[in-house]
Length: 399
Image (cartoon, rainbow, N blue to C red; front, side, top):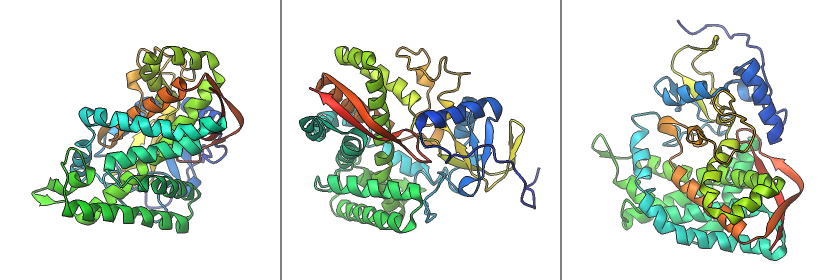
């Protein structure tokens, strides 16, 4: 089979911008899974969406056919930049991933936990003192900046700067505002370049420091290109800042709406790790991670051609009724919860998943332990494509 020479007429099956409300977006995906599981949209220049669990998983694992180096997200960075490891394919992707994985061992995360817990308590304190606050935009945007700061061994003074810069970058990226994206990205590049310069002058143990690990890594016997090391660190500065506010906001709103579950987890905190996995399934924050095929590919009788972006709608896959019974319902002891794909699958699964789990567990434990109850009040803002979930929600606290 060869690529079609002339542009094809492909019907538009859905409009991803028709709603940002999480319930409405999930209703769209529910309809697509039944009616048109391999769906096409004309938005963002045109893209496909895989909505069924099996299709998403197969594409994520078949990374030699579904590659990331052409388009990794829809909508993509308006400047079209490519940074490792997310925007690289194997084998060039592998050394960057290996170097970062080395700094996320269980032992290192255990050493970081007390420090991270202290940051969580400090960032929750102003909200508790006021009796209310935006759990996503205040706590959810600031605590992850401390997690990134501690992981990368940045100067502590950079944590609030990173929180503000990354938040502005994310918001501008969603609007496709090239000027603001470029300005905020440049600031993070400056942080990354300073980090590389410092570690070249004074290396740290590779298992304790991502920049040192990247500088020590070798590909085919040679050091990694320094500009690509800078790019990998620049990517690391922001990837951990996008999803956490959304997941934290979504979990908090769910617990506000289900006061019985909120109290149950408060009384039995040992259940929080199990509950967290179900929250991650239910509120997977991504709908726009993308691949492109290396050759014409037919999925469920629809042909996808090279250069046509294909989104792996993890948020849809994790609510596929063919895999998860009562997929829209929170089930604390779901027997197959390990099958969820909130962190993706394959080579490009989220390298920071262990750290993300630790961060979210600490956040939920401290939020519950230090309150008698909390309730969401006022309007709730949903995330725009490529994310999905609550990006702003005001909570009132009873201490």
